[in-house]
Length: 328
Image (cartoon, rainbow, N blue to C red):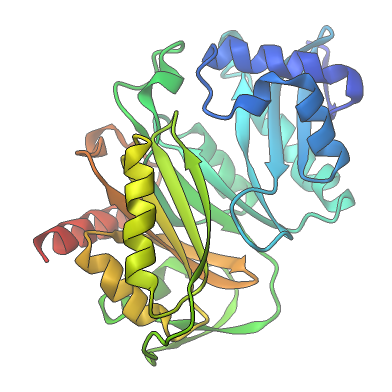
């Protein structure tokens, strides 16, 4: 098998589109993957780097890193690992990710990575462990079921295991909500980061909250990243929730900065609105973040496939927290 692995080149962009179509049909929830010009422009801008597996001139697999949700633009997400169904179990994705991590990403100066490993199988979970990722959370029911209709690999919505591979020499404060005083530090184990976990909190002041939003109506997911927390947090949260619900979203995610002591009362408000823990997010803001999540449907917990005790323990903690916030 004459397999080439390399950074995407200009002539590869149409083949990348065909790879997505072969695996997902027309149901991948990010429309730009079907646009060769957009694919090329993103790489030229330094926002998206694809490492491809090419067999007999055809793009048969890829892994990628890209700027996504984090306000920290030096933190890239690794994801969209894809291999044609008929070529799986030949370690194509493993070889692609191996070269990307050993040579291509370092050459591009990409040292802080995170990823979402879909939980309808455990292949990416195993690969993540081999590459040095540490799991820190789970996004429950992140992906819509119809994204997997073509390959029939899930009977419901698909969750994603969050992992980080971080180089950070800074000593940072992490403010802990009392409900997570014992849970969140455990999520940091193995990351080799210098963190001070503190119980201090400050009330929300009269300053105005600042938030950015990403609403994926086709996927039913809304993400709200709070850059500033003020006394209007509760009202802003209600407004954003309504906006998301009006567009058919049933998965709502809220991201908060753990370096700020006012994160504690903000989490109080979220927990009273049935939000539960999603995970720890090292260097999300430069400083660390936390994911809180809310589901407006009954989740596909039984469909979550995980590899290893660490991931199983994270899921158990999140499910327990969801039940606690629902009772509250």
